[in-house]
Amino acid sequence: MQCNMMRLSSCWVNNNIRINNTNGTSIRRRLRASLSVTTGESTMATNSVRVAAAQMTSITDLASNFSTCSRLVKEAASAGAKLLCFPEAFSFVGAKDGDSVSIAQPLDGPIMDQYCSLARESSIWLSLGGFQEKGSDPRHLFNTHVVVDDTGKIQTTYRKIHLFDVDVPGGRVYKESNFTESGKDIVAVDSPIGRLGLSVCYDLRFPELYQLLRFQHGAQILLVPAAFTKVTGEAHWEILLRARAIENQCYVIAAAQAGTHNDKRESYGDTLIIDPWGTVVGRLPDRLSTGIVVADIDLSLVDSVREKMPIAKQRKPFDFWKAASL
Picture 1 (cartoon, rainbow, N blue to C red):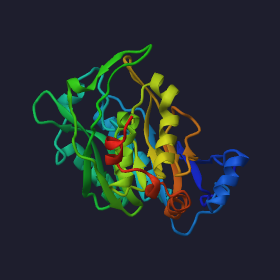
Picture 2: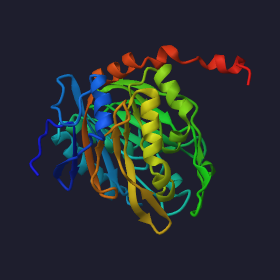
Picture 3: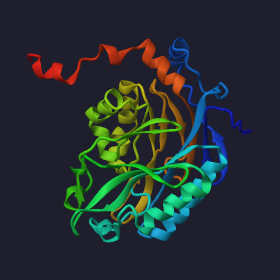
Picture 4: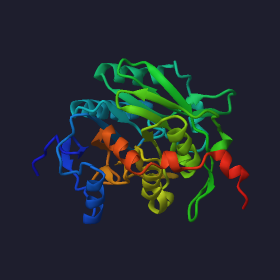
């Protein structure tokens, strides 16, 4: 297949580009046309910005994971992306619970410094989440989403609020709170791509976080780095991501861990980029491969969807529901 780099959606796997067919049904095309939305068959809008999302299978080897990330950064920069989003635990996945505590470092430590150098050398913004940030005591860490600008400077950080304490049906029991401290702050940050709303993995199941990011913090693009389990990913991953995009009228960039990390842990994969109408505009052709997906984000689409369906004006404030009788 001949590849047109001006198409809306493309995938890089093993240094090759593929174009995804992400137009959806004819009904969706008519709906999008009524909102003056550009479909995947159109050329890139003049005010759009190219982004990329990475998919990988992190292991216990910090150097090997960094080598994979370095290669993907170069691919994204070569594709013209201004932002590359990595999945949760991009730098390390332990063989057993608590392993991450032993390698956790402060944000000014050598591990994060390597990734800041990657951003600076390739002149690209990086979304790194979650990073194993050293906690307030020796037995805990923070699961921290770090945004680094194209000069290698950390612009902001978000510490994962909702910790994965779950008995997965048909799977194992997870207790992230045993070794992770919960964050307390909601974080959004301006970037050349737009205003980014930060989250990590299990946060995805709590829509109020994303509503606050959109309606109180002005987010236009929601970042969801994740390492969903195979069981929960098959059941809920795409549904939840598209719901967050639709109900908040935001782009969603969801970078995912994929495949078997060790004999105790397997991630679902399926890295996605979704537009504010809920259409998947970027997806790797192989749910488990290592690579990047590239798409062009057009903030005029965000404005158009919000103008024609003005839920920001129509929604009730949080205080309304406290006073409402049930």
